[in-house]
Amino acid sequence: QNSSIVRPVHTRPISPSTKCTYQYRPALPKGFHERTMSYPEGTVFYPADDLVLAGDMTPEQVSACLGAGAKSWLYLNDDCHAKCPKEAVEGASLPFECVPVMSPASLTPAVVDTLLHVMATAARPLVIQCSTATRAGFPVILAKARNEKLGAASALQAAGSMNPPLKFTARPELCAGVAAALAPRKPTIFRQLFDSGSSTYTYLIADGPGGDAVLIDPVLEMVERDLRLIQELGVNLTYVLNTHCHADHITGSGLIKRTLGNVKSVIAAASGADADVKVAHGDRVTFGDLAIEVRATPGHTNGCVTYVFQNKVFTGDALLIRGCGRTDFQEGSSEGLYDVVRSQIFSLPDDTVVYPAHDYKGHCSSTVGEEKKLNYRLSGTKAEFVEIMNNLQLSYPKKIDVALPANMVCGIQD
Image (cartoon, rainbow, N blue to C red; front, top):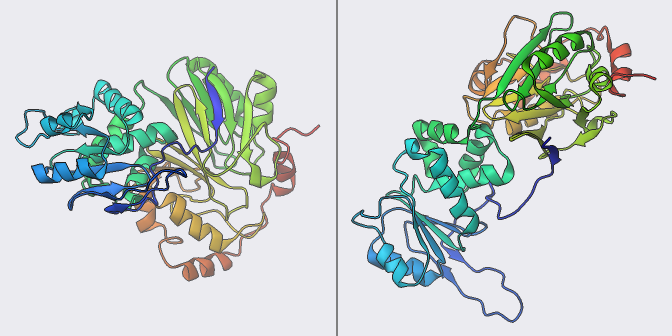
């Protein structure tokens, strides 16, 4: 069993806040002399990552890169290209790797593995060069996704958040190709299940037949159904995840744990509820070869989290299809919910599929793009949203007095 909770790591990070500059004076250990790094016009230097992205260069520009302190070179065109700098780079006794990536179709598993190896082992500063610096972003984001256990949606969001954004993010067809390269290499199992009594969706994700699996937001009354499906599919349930402490149903986490014995319950530490594992913003839940990213999205309750997996986002009650969870109990906040939906969910690529914890109108899923445009509560200003939420006049949740105390102890009360 290869499952764990991973805290954020910062090994050679490719940070969305990384700024582009052509001048860099790194902090050097005491006793070393400072040297100025100056790369030629037209190149993009990300100093926090020691990466230089470049298109075709003149011999003078190549020499300028070498003089600025470049330590290795990754070339994404054929080495027979008229402007290939191989001779000059190797003449300067620098490692020169040629991995032709002429389009996203070139990103086969073998090529991706080669790029990841170069990104992990090449001396820095590393120059990554293609014809226009567009494809040069491919290995950057592939490495970020691998290092930080990001799925396609989160990785593409990060690529677009870099300063400046990686150039390929301006072209949807290139983004689609990169997303395909980031997809799991073996088929995953995904099931959406529904409880009509509480209008709750439960989600099963597994690392292929016989692989490790997680269950998101199980309902106590539907545990028998869920366990039967797990047995039929032959998967190994390792974690039961809750998006928050629900007020409309009792979680099935505790009963599942009692029945299977080797399953761990997961909930946000901010919820104050009992669980085997308490997660926070930025954590990863890993199972098999897969990983789910945890994003804190308080507002419906103070302990809500959203789970991002590949091109899917499980939003709990923070974002519903054409709506959202109420904010008038469990330390809710209309202002806070508006902010986190925008920063943590609406910031994902528009084609990211939205899977909520509930639906009351027969919808199964939506997309980030749809909700940004069509969610009448959240498509306006913050002031408009707060006004809407303050005037919902919702009744007291019918099951809250039973469900909430039980959910605070994983659905099992001694």
